[in-house]
Image: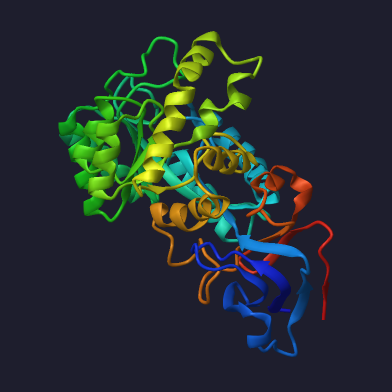
Length: 391
């Protein structure tokens, strides 16, 4: 049956508005048709009833920065096949954690094929996939479509957009990963970044930029990149620039979290760089929050790590409500898909989680997968752990 009604639940709609303590959500097909107080909504007689008494409904979570596949510049044709097959399992596991949308930060034309296969229903129970194509400086931090100089950069962006990708991912600084590079290294000049941004914007595509430190952060802001990623060594000047231009900031605190730093297999050079950035990263996010910068959620991790990111954001001063909004409305807005997902509102896709307890009182309940009782994507119940429906 296409009609469903989630009844008697606490509703956090992702907009940051008032919580509905005893509410109803009506779904018809893949869309939400009504959200409100239980007493105000009439339930169709042919709707499947999903009772969620004592539970909380929130929008499906969004990971705005995950490497679903390996960097394309490191793969041959067999590698692309293998990586896209592995990605299916990763996206299925993401969905089981309640991450209904994932942005692939290491995308390429082959990722577009995967996205279309998921959208067609040929591959099931996967998170919705948003494809960001890598365009990068030769020998830079990321390894996708290498391009140097303004006109070669423009050509690379044109190629990626023509293949059907959703946004362009680039890098302005070094990072933690490669032993030979330093985090402060510049990848692209302002001239190259500006050409990349102008070409992407001319085709209606946004630009996400890996930028940890200066001067790459200022280069990214000056060029007009839409989403600033990481900022592990972000400073006051960069935060002021982000605020002035009203850009999005996705800090990916997960990458400097204790969970990552304490991994026994982590190479020594990465561990040291992450430890050095740990406190600065969190101070920067706290200041960004105080300044009213729009903070989105990405992990640079894997399935379920979005829950760790939410907890890290709360430690940085965001309220649990603000953290949930960051992982839903804000990230959807940063990805340019807010018209269809990210909040529980009529007309939006029915991407809905039902969780045990109240995450506004304790955000850490989301760290336990057993508390993710139901995952709905496009109006279809994909995961159910103890939530039963009755006609």
